[in-house]
Length: 499
Image 1 (cartoon, rainbow, N blue to C red):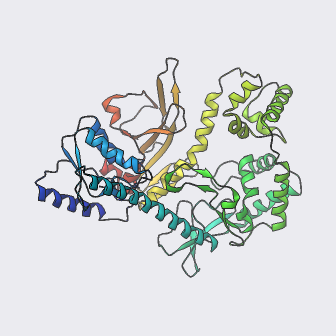
Image 2: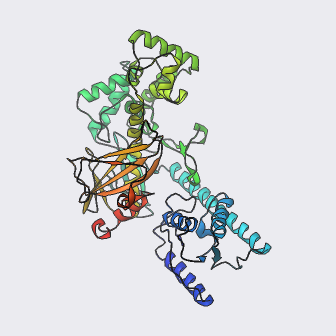
Image 3: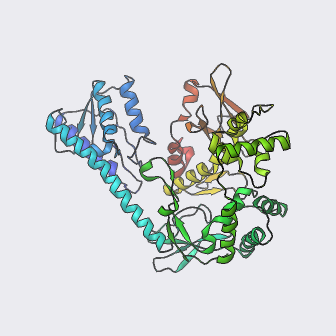
């Protein structure tokens, strides 16, 4: 059984009733139930129950001879109909038949049933595609009317809740979301001191000729922090200088992640925009002057031009690092070299530079640090989506959930030993002492999460835990393939009673 969202409160109950009635009519005994609640059917991600069912079938652990499925779409609304067909094939290959309880045909392998299954699978995928188109059109309409569609407000701005008539209802703080469907969110100027800092950034960049790095240094020297409570960097200043929301424009669809496919960066022609949607805090002429400066210096370098510049920088400085590259004026950033050549080490090799030490771990740590804010924000948003409450400490990122327990999220880097085996070292912050530590183990390339460990403080007293690829039954009790298990528990009243 599967239901897509938590709002479908009785969906799985209705499916279960129909399945039990079907089984009773045919004299079938139900011995196990697999249910994915609040899970999209677009892919297998987060579908722990379906994964467990397939694992039990393929691993020979199934103590049943039939699988009863409510209807074709409960397998999923896969965009590739062959994926849904494959799941059924896996079960039949293991000697376990699949029956559909709410479909008007018998799944008996006949030509007629196969044709109907194929059509139903295509229809299930098409339903999600059409729904995606309708939702996208609705979001575009809201953008054009000046409403904000997700994302933090940014430094110098705030999110304001308005009702369907446009009357202000109050300011939303970080982590808060609207609770009434007809309410909307708009951007408004933030505190006066933040607004003045934003304006100063533009004046310093345009009129005084200061670089983003110089502006960041001055802000940090004045002990000012970003809207996320972090020190300013060249990149965070640059984001303020190029974002049209500071002149009141509402821009959306810069990135696409439709139907849970690969995230892509859209060209400006596909952006959805509404000009003058919000009250501006920066004058248009000043903003355009800043964009002109940025466009003028945005020279496209060929691979050889970038490498020649890197060779000259090596001759001037005697060594190379990401920091050395980023500090060089009128020079591509270290991220540009990573994007163009795959990694800084690869670029170093192409100019004949060999660091005296292995810097790959630095590259990996930087990448994981960039990944962390998105993971944290996603966890918070999903807990709140399931009606849980979360407070996030801006200094430590410690989560207080439902005012009952604390949780800390850590990303654990994968280490490849000389023997080729993999190791992970989970470090616990003794100062924070969270009730639950959510450890995200990365894969061998440190690019994607491998699995998740939910480690309660009462059971883990050491300052660090070292894990291998296979850790035995004790540690398997803490291991989950998806972080959704923690999110589901965290949204409930008490994780202690759930545990």
